Length: 423
Ligand code: GDP
Image (tube, rainbow, N blue to C red; front, side, top):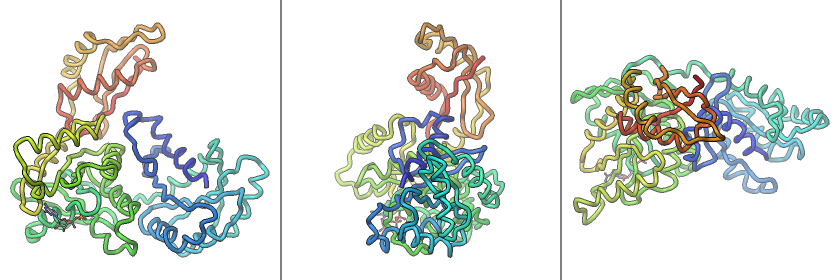
């Protein structure tokens, strides 16, 4: 289909702008993209393979239903070299009935002759056909211009100064149990506030001296007609929760440890530059615990999180109500870390001597000098280091700067961005 190529095109624009996440993305199916200042998540549904029409009724139907239910905008990618297939017709039939903005994308339009061939897809009854070549980017700019225009501005968050926390994790780790434990019994003392999107409930928790908004997307589970275990579905839900929150509480199952699926969700949080706390739940089920058990497990988890290891990890049991308040306090601390603005004077007094002690290596015969650093006035921590040859500063040195920042200031649980600028 060339769908993956398009996906890579969309998400690499982001990589070019922020390279801090380079090397941490383990999954190629979800990514962030920016176009004309609009930031959005791109999800590759997986799609279908040519010649596998018999499986349409199963997996494909589910994927299309999910996209219709969950996405803001749908890009339906067809292949100009094959023309309209039976599967295309079946998918188009479902999409025509959907009340979602659909972009019909004719891919592999690498030459003028194929532009004419693309006209065939008007026959699918989905309106305008966008001709692109994902391979060489032709047409993707026009497509993206229209895609970002179609985003629903009403989905923007309402103004609130309270921190927003989301509980995320793969199925069965105990997310609903934790939400119920925090909100369930105290229903009378929590105030439901207007949700920001049709599918999530934002509840204010103002009790025991804590005041925050809990973002709950679990409710949409009942609405979806598809099987719960579909990975795509749980990812869609995670993305929504992540996007609507400031800090994510990523739950793991203590009996399973940290696996690829957990790391994929962790990467989504980092890509979205949200704060993060890891909760190892069901600690009650771990037998023969001694004082070093938690330390050992913590080390194992941290090793998997590398290079972003500087994350709080709390061992909890929702069942036995163990350390739930500690989990909340950790999220509040991460929120404070994420919101802090370090005075320029203090930043320079700390970082410049470190840089003088261990300057960047000579590269291409250039003597690289970093003279000044300041935190940019962005929502997420972003530090600009001013330098005579910013393009020659190596990734490893940026890592070094980030580590030194973390040693001297508390950015535990917070993705930090380092940029080199010309001075
Ligand atoms: P979700 O899919 O992440 O929302 O997970 P649920 O909240 O539905 O929990 C899945 C299962 O794990 C349920 O049977 C819970 O009772 C159980 N569970 C949740 N938390 C704990 C815990 O701390 N200890 C134990 N032993 N079981 C738990």
